[in-house]
Image 1 (cartoon, rainbow, N blue to C red):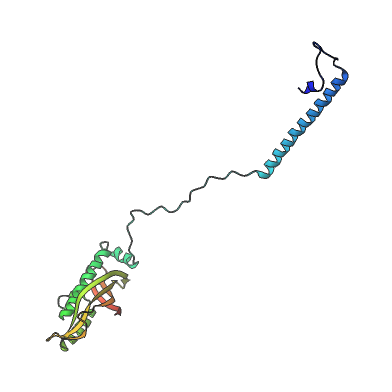
Image 2 (image 1 turned 180 degrees about the vertical axis):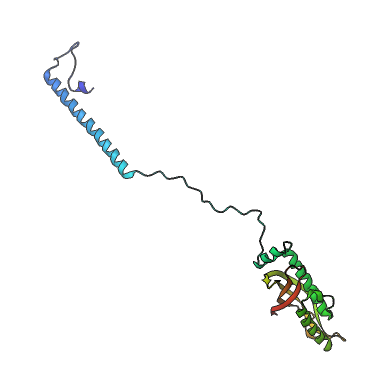
Length: 230
């Protein structure tokens, strides 16, 4: 179509003038112009591609690496909350924290009952000689004053081991008791309330320390510390 528009046509029926040198020169000029633009277009594209590659090349994003942490601890036995219990378990593998708390609570109620009855004969084996002497002195004072210290409706709210360890061949465990009860004194003959209240309970927080020699089985109450009472 381009050649026809430039006046190039072969001889044929009804043909006009023939093909001349001027026409050939004109065609060469046109082809030269076309070649120039085609070459320049290709060169420009190549330069653009090269420039784009140099300025906008981005490194491939690496595949995210999963964050690894310590494996979940499953079916692991719970260790003792008080570090000193480990030493006791080393010497006595049968030691159980739960069983000890049950034992401490049993001793707690037995001693409270013996105190109210002013008779320590049934619980003396649960006391160290020092504690037995202290309790007996207080009981003797109550008998002499003809009073009874009533401890009733005892409700233990919390029993927790708070300290444990070994010292000079002796093991000890301290238990926290948080409880409430009726605490009042009466005359041993008439039953008249002398102090305290027989209907208004009080709350108290006490720490009972039990001890035994290393290698022995039975525990005994060695001390009581009262933190608060209201």
